[in-house]
Image 1 (cartoon, rainbow, N blue to C red):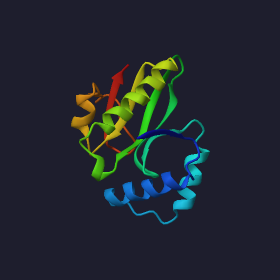
Image 2 (cartoon, rainbow, N blue to C red):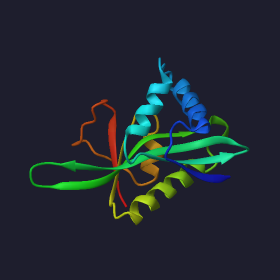
Image 3 (cartoon, one colour):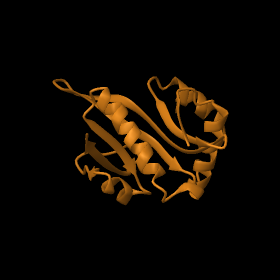
Length: 148
């Protein structure tokens, strides 16, 4: 399995996998082209992916971001989307991909990761994420954080 780092989200391998991911979630998108263009315009968004037999089988989309107020700034890693193809689940691929991303952020001097989930809280908690009830997500999903 090959690790691929995607910065162009109009990459056909990524687009096919992302459509499958949204189909699994029951999310209908009227204009995928506009969605992928929006992903590309979100500066700093990068996707770590595993490819096997010229098919993207898992991806984790993330970016470094900043929480700020009038006195403090905190740089953190945000995990935006995370998916493993159904035929590749429970084989350690998701855990391996998460470790790649954690190492990426750690080497960039980022100490915290943050994400929302309504589908896999036990997976994230198994990997050291904790619920962050004092942080409210705009999508109303539960927020989890991890100190690297």
